[in-house]
Length: 169
Image (cartoon, rainbow, N blue to C red; front, side):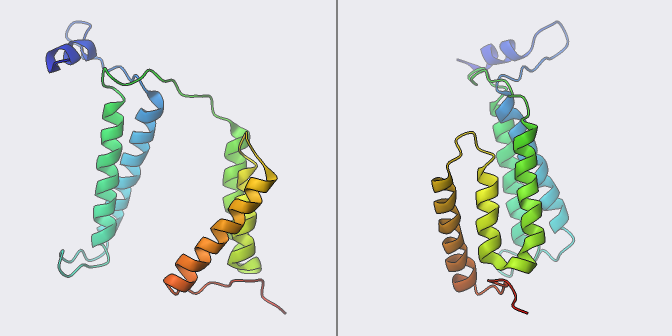
């Protein structure tokens, strides 16, 4: 398919150009990523940038934000192409949204009191209940696996200091 055929499909109705969003999920996901990336890049400008050879604290977040914005724009633009599959947005499942946001908020409250290990395990198990395919066995195994991964990557690997268990006393 050549460019002129694609443009004819996207532009119609006289002088007014009309873009048809064929894949709404990809389009809105792309817009979200582009906005988050642009905001991250803009926020990183408050820090010294440095150079590629001598990076400042704003260098990596800036380029990561730019990359995310470009990736999001590409996904959104692909969703309006003539080859994009037609896909509509599903209605918002408020129960799922409430479980996910509530789990993360609860984890933020519990972290200081229960430590990383218990809080992360609770977060994974609670947020897993939002799935329509929820299984206790899978949730517990995922919670244990993610807790071990966080311990290895962030505590042992990077040496970050977090309270690991509930404070005694």
